[in-house]
Length: 391
Image 1 (cartoon, one colour):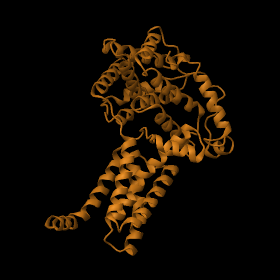
Image 2: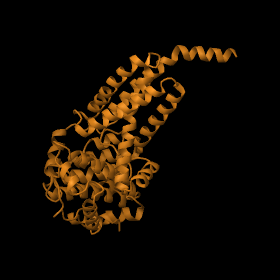
Image 3: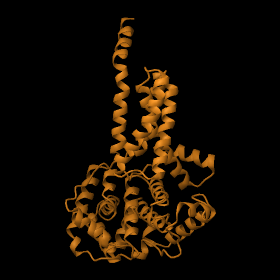
Image 4: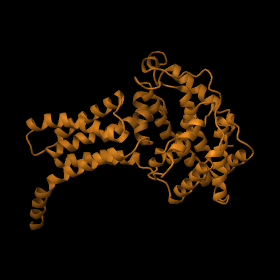
């Protein structure tokens, strides 16, 4: 009995400090977990979306991913409500409903490095307010609140956790430095894309003494994901790369193209890198999410061409690292010369630059028949690319 009384008194003394500490910690995490990241939802969430809404796998995964991100933002409202649980509801409610959306926007702003666009603001504010209302309803029961906090935090951190082994991280870093050392010798245009691809894969293969083909291909793809794609690919793996000469890196990216376009090269390698760090479906979600953001005012517009480049990069990563045989097949193909058409098919007749309204009204949005027709056409074209088939 003495132990129980002591425990209760200790909780009464230190318990109120738990929620502010958790709120501060969660705010820091939301600020520091960098984008882009493969925020793919768990299989059960994807299946629930598919069965409830009757939409395709990629759309279900994208929607489930958005729902998981909303959970992370909603947790701000729950925690702030629990922080003020000892104050009367009449005073607490307006404070929580006013401060929580501001916290969400601030965290997004710090995370992105720019003020959130309209769609991001809507998601952040709505999620925060829903979390605030739930927190206010549960504030009388610290047990129920604690269980909800654990569930939301666990789910969010589960689907954002990504990491790679020490040897893969080091080999990718060494390969990336090797590519940058060769930057002055890299031609511009599509020839530069082919040359860097060849150098990365052959160097990674040689560095592993030809003994681990899958590991070598992962190394090359991660290095190219950072060098030709985006430095933040390395941050997704929680292994930031220290590139001193960013001016040289940006110059290299700007003059290397795929199908004559600089943006397609970046789409290709970012998606390939994310597929190595996570999985195929999560990378698809990131690509779809990016295109939806582009379709908002101020963006470059929804692009089926970009989607095809994303998908091509994912297929290269998945099929070249599935097993040792397929990994060696790609290495053999590269040793005999890189042909661009083996990595990305023709982009003609694929719509791009679509505003959100046009994408919804003309193409029916993500679930529309015209969108599905074009997605099927993209898959048909990609199936003709020898390097993406893993054979």
